[in-house]
Image (cartoon, rainbow, N blue to C red; front, side):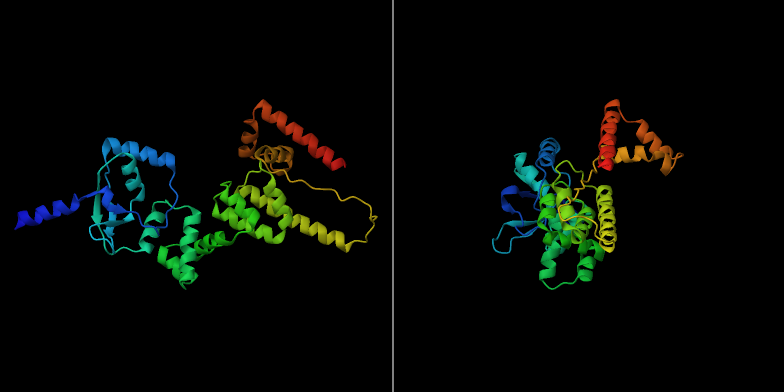
Length: 288
């Protein structure tokens, strides 16, 4: 009896399924796969095989077939490696929520995939707090990702183009867009503009300053003639330009700031020349 039980355990733990009997879940949350990483995994599987079994459940409509619960990368990489079978275990107690949790724990989902899942749960009537508990994330995490489903066109274009996938940055840009849409659109239209948390923070500070200037201007007597031209302000927030600002105001900020001094000292001669050029631009701009 012991031997029979032992044999059954071995059989279950080493279950091999034919790859041609497995279907991917058409509704699985993960839809994007890096082709380079997939090929790398395929090369490893070709040499070493699949070490971690995938999870499947019986196909509800076709007897003898199975649907993936999780392990889509291993499944696809095995197909690329021309494998015939794959280690698997059958789990009938598996849901779409389990899929999203599995992928979140592996950091295997893109922000868009997470947003799509959250949007689907909202459409089913679940509330923010319920979804957050469902996937083990904070309500803020749910709200930030849900926002991705309804972005202003200019910000959606930046996100879809991959210029930034940082959800915090996108949320901050949306808030900036509500305050000053034209400024944000002009800023995003600069293809060389780095879109980071730091640069967006500076952008929002600029918008805040601009707003104060507008209020102050409107509160003063209007001394301009109807034909007077409005000067156009251009934002410069690339890495070199920010370093230039740091360099210019170094003494005023903190002469003892070792980190800042070290960062500036590490600039190459060409970078120094670039900073000098930017300094000239700023001086000329101030004289206008």
